[in-house]
Image (spheres, rainbow, N blue to C red):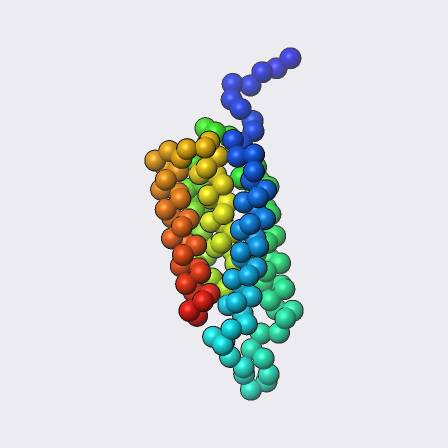
Length: 145
């Protein structure tokens, strides 16, 4: 029998809740960004047909599934804070594409990693601050245009 010196499971047993919650919020915000008066009608008709929105949100959710399945699910208590900070930093440039919903999904993944061990460390707190800022700017972008 072989033993490993570290835990192979994440401390966040409820990471699927973070995945579903952040994906749901991303779908709602993306729909608001696509179908409010921000983009407005064009001469050819509506600014964004429904199929374009389905493609955008499908790609964002697929990326989110990949991040949650490969990064968040496999995080150990010893490296979850670092993984969360990396995801949070990667989410910052995605705020440019706030309408895609991807920043919210990545912020949710970073939050899941930061809270993997229960009480976050200093690195975990920094991750939560960055994730909250990304979420806030994304909501502001989707609602204000």
